[in-house]
Image 1 (cartoon, rainbow, N blue to C red):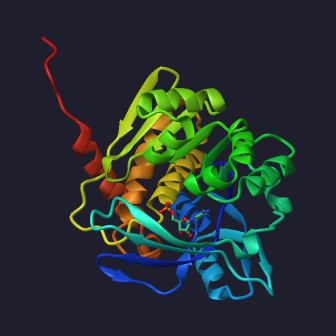
Image 2 (cartoon, rainbow, N blue to C red; image 1 turned 180 degrees about the vertical axis):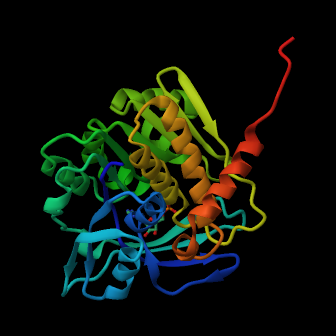
Length: 308
Ligand code: AMP
């Protein structure tokens, strides 16, 4: 089992869906990724930053799942990154209402000594300069570097983002972001172009329509589980990424065949995340529930056909 370092926002989120509205609750890309990866019992740690307004109990909730937060800097006189979003009725699309970078605006990440030898590096969604800062601090290149990003950073910091993309092995982005990054409408063409930017593997997330894994000329599809009830899709993409890297770190296998299992694992974890508001479902999830649902994924995709 490999060690896993996760970089990303630890945040306050305020969410509005057709089913309700929250005040500032625990959120952030690194939060969702780490909660998801923690299901695999890997030794994981977060590098991030919060302000003095961030309740210590929130960090304790992550510690309770075995997540090391020594690399989460607390700027006592600063304010925590804040994101607010409102979902449309289809729950597949949302408007970002507020992105307040606050302490993230001039964050200098420091990788804790105990994670300098990390084998797996998950660069979650945050400023690409921070992602690059972490890559540069790790003396021996990790076995696998996975990057997740979003349109906000493409709009505001594209050059820095491109430098990071050139250094990674796997990129996970959603379909709209893949189109924006590549300038191609076809996701097959988009993946090919993104592949040329650096990553050998391109994962394109399509929300309730599953995810595609591209590797050279091969493509693998992981469906999303059709769910009876979806309350809040926030964090589903990060949870997917956490399920992907968590599975790979646990199995210590970076072959294409294992990545296929990893995208199924990501889809599986994401299907839980959306069942309750914020991180709630991810915090009470058990491994037995995950295993049980994996069987549903198998049944959903298996079929026999005569090739006559
Ligand atoms: P997802 O629904 O997977 O796209 O992720 C939602 C999470 O991403 C929320 O918890 C937010 O705090 C976080 N987030 C939103 N915008 C950004 C951003 N520009 N950079 C980093 N994290 C963000």
